[in-house]
Image (cartoon, rainbow, N blue to C red; front, side, top):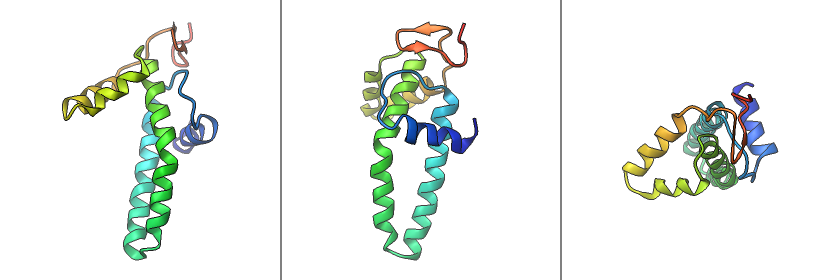
Length: 120
């Protein structure tokens, strides 16, 4: 799947789906696509202040799918979605989440479903 394909999967198909698993490619493609959109909207905001409304609307619209894909990514590594709250710990929490986000999927089936990457 390509960059936009993963973004559409997160936003259109799994908008508020907090169950199941998400591969690293899904999380990072979604994050990269959002980062590009935020930069473009920030540039447009500098050009014309009216785009502030669009920027805020986009940020609010992406809040739920961002949390959902992060939770599904944690599920893919065998961790509970509640581990996302570790990110509230200054510095260490963010680093720990990044390590988990970069960790490979657990093989086969775990309590959150079957791995797309390692189905058997």
